[in-house]
Length: 100
Image 1 (cartoon, rainbow, N blue to C red):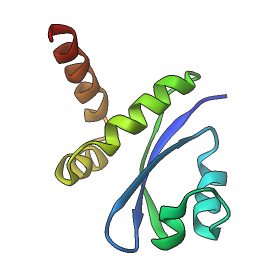
Image 2 (cartoon, helix red, strand yellow):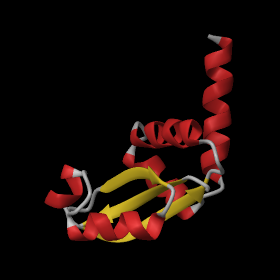
Image 3 (tube, one colour):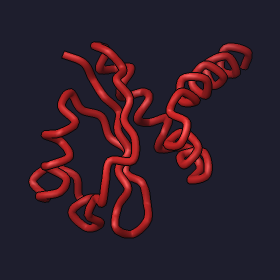
């Protein structure tokens, strides 16, 4: 079972980021308001903006989700347009943390 990090574009023109092991099921839960996410109950998702398959490591998926949530809107839009840039940003962050 692989874990995914996904970004949703919501009807208030913001991005919601989450992780799951089943993107289709989780997206339906966001749409229907049946998940535990208060944010997407208030601001309905319009579409899945981007998603990344992060393999079997749930902790890594959670770490990536947290990382994305801390990014600026401009950077989020950049990784949506260029999904391959996400891993480069993560590597850069980890290197800078190692040097600190």
